[in-house]
Amino acid sequence: MMKVTLQSLLTGALVLLASCSQVTDLATPHKDQSPKCEVHGRVMAPEIIRVEGESVYINGYPATAKKSFPHHGGVVLNGERYRRFEFGGRVRDFVCADCDQAHDAWWKEWKARRQ
Ligand SMILES: [Zn+2]
Image 1 (cartoon, rainbow, N blue to C red):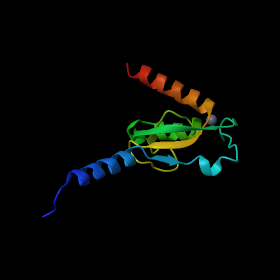
Image 2 (cartoon, rainbow, N blue to C red):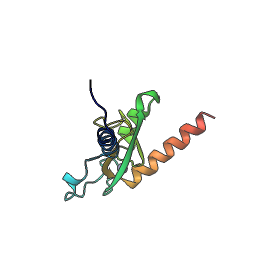
Image 3 (tube, rainbow, N blue to C red):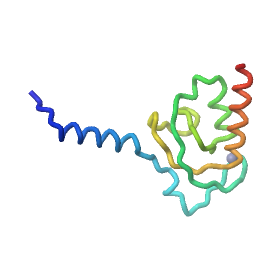
Image 4 (cartoon, rainbow, N blue to C red):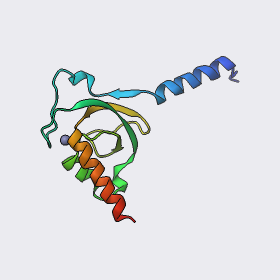
């Protein structure tokens, strides 16, 4: 039978905390390239983005996100970018200010339509 000690519990808690705060860094490998948004032509800057939920549950959102605001910051939903991320995780990626504006406007309109 496995003996559970205080030390093993603390180690497990620390490992869990470390994995929760882990950031997938997509920006650092490209930091010398000053990437531009392919939609807006604007030079982007790295930001931390939270990963929450699935985009497939919002009708039309994944296609619109890819076409109109592929590099927004704030919160990203799985399925709207070229790869999936750990749910509840964080991603450090390049963000375009114009994509941010378009993203915010889309959500504002979406929320208004639902009222
Ligand atoms: Zn953009």
